[in-house]
Length: 295
Image (cartoon, rainbow, N blue to C red; front, top):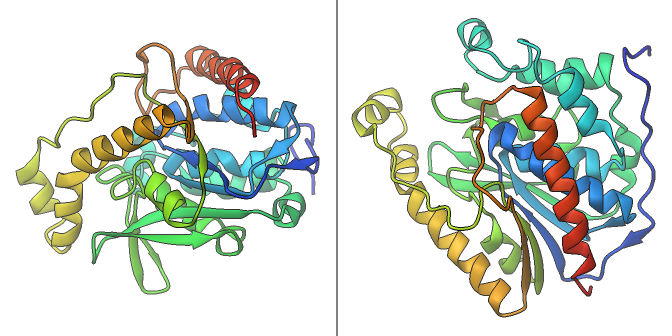
């Protein structure tokens, strides 16, 4: 198969960190390229976590890290994020989603920028992606074997309410995992991990506000009352999970990596210059964080 960009083959990770060490990932749309920069620092150090859990953009960008393809995510920012097929209002008009998920998860890895499925599948770790069940308003977790083929689970986890279509899979109606588990630290704890490296995409001091457009929400998702309730409670869940992460860090049970200053971009930013700067910031802060962690 011929690709439009040089093929970046995955390199197997030399060191799997000790069991009980987890990588916990927030989403954030294109803000998630900060996290992708952090993953680049992990690849520089040739390490992989035995347990990774993520939602939305965190779950999407970490795929390249698991596949060991250093530089691939940065190349995506440089060459493709600015394309209308990647993210545009035109996508929303034509396909019902602001992000072009077919383009991102099928066209790009099949035609433009090789994704190393072999290394991804060979990497023996526990990896979970969460999506929100629209019927129950609860998180459904999917394991690594369920994610690898087609990435429909990842698409579901990235599908932001209003801006994306509901993803139907095996009789389930799924949306953004960040609705019900915006920072999936509780999943990591429940699965028995005792040290958590948590990558956030908002600066310290950020507090999520309540959803304001309640009437529109109830009309738009009138078939899914549990989903409506979950969206209305999302700010409470986010702030609770954030407080838990910060308490774990104070207790020496976690390390939080996040932007040092408030971001000037939102989840739908396509400004390549700003996103590359954010990526490089994540890379630098990931490197600094590793220097201060004893695994």
